Length: 404
Ligand code: PGA
Ligand code: ZN
Image 1: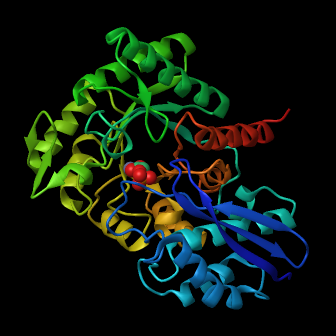
Image 2: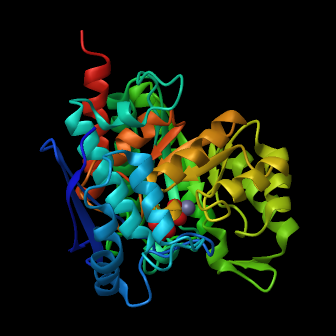
Image 3: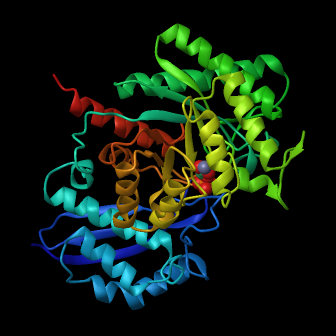
């Protein structure tokens, strides 16, 4: 077995222009891997801290003093490297080394091992029974609000969900919805400025319910034109506007029961097939109520409630809180802990959706994570180099899988 001959951690910038980290791992065989870690804006209370208290400089200092000496010369094995990261920082939120340090080193190690074995990353990470031919739905952001946009709706993400066996068709269908939503916004207010948010979706001064209507109409039209199954979805990121027991929209304030009713009504009225974080991050029981009401029609996804953590997912499984989980590597820290959560989900019939962060990097490894997990969906936005990098990598994987 080869060993870690070199490991480095360096500052880089994400798509919001904020500092984050990139790791490079060199194996004694000469194989190498480089990966960066993305960052969220609407982070969950229980997710790994991206950086130690003093940010990127602190992360690099801790890496040099405590991590690099332990990693150099270690066995080139993903579980061993991830185990070392956990040994150095056993805190549940990885606040000593930072979740982004862990993610960058873990993914760079996996890429180096894939390089060494002359195989694609997804094969190295593939869960039992996954053969790389079942491609995820594209969950693509068309209209941004909440913390990812200034002046948009309270709801964070209005999504196109494109399903089908061929990734190139799903990507094209989701992109068409994005384009049609833009055209509708221009028609609606021809002289108003129209911008794009952190994840490449449009930003416009529209209300929440109006936005659902625009999205539904665009999906209807794209389905008619292309014949592909593309339908509306939403990430409410509800923890962001939940305070003192109430969900506070600009147009209305509702309690938990009211929120469950409102979301169920939106699912029925607009044919939503995907509903992420409809309730607060501690609301396991109300989540279950909503899943009982709409779970047969829609994929109900927990993001901030689970934060890719097996313990929190276990509770969600026991309480039947949702039928799906969002998977973000830097919420968990390492690939090993991410995949443990994915395995728990798979064992209980909980669908997985591999996800980008709102501040991301022009790297494609997330597409491999999605394929390796047999994920129901890949949520990585539609526009901007950092989003397109993942979509294009999925297309490459599709070409490899369906090569004549
Ligand atoms: P974040 O948001 O990356 O800003 O946390 C993405 C999401 O909520 O899905
Ligand atoms: Zn989310």
